[in-house]
Image 1 (tube, rainbow, N blue to C red):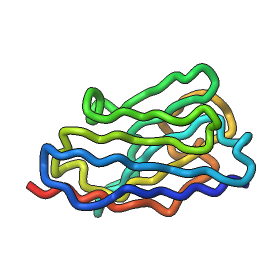
Image 2: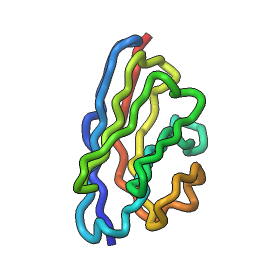
Image 3: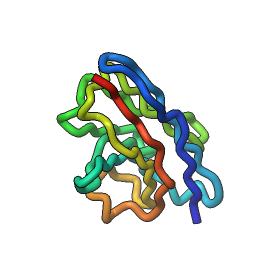
Image 4: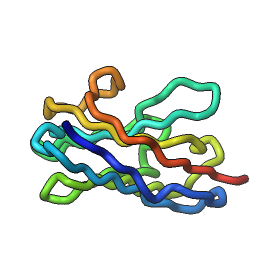
Length: 124
């Protein structure tokens, strides 16, 4: 099992920045791809970004490309999401996720482990 704990959410004005962290514990060898998803009120959970520890490939949703950056430490225990130029439409609960297979995918159904989420609110 892999346990994921997110931190770093909060309230920020439009144009501001936040950095989310996700700490993994337990059987971290099973977290070969880590991703961020978000869910706004009344909307479905959507893919934001992901990183594979096998080669370090990354992938971003079009809506955040150029504004968000996903990264992680070499020990594969923590993944970060640097969010710049935040917009009110970025307001959501942000979830960290991990999957065993080391290829980046955007479907939430293919991630086996999930954190509890952290709220990000961007005011206009």
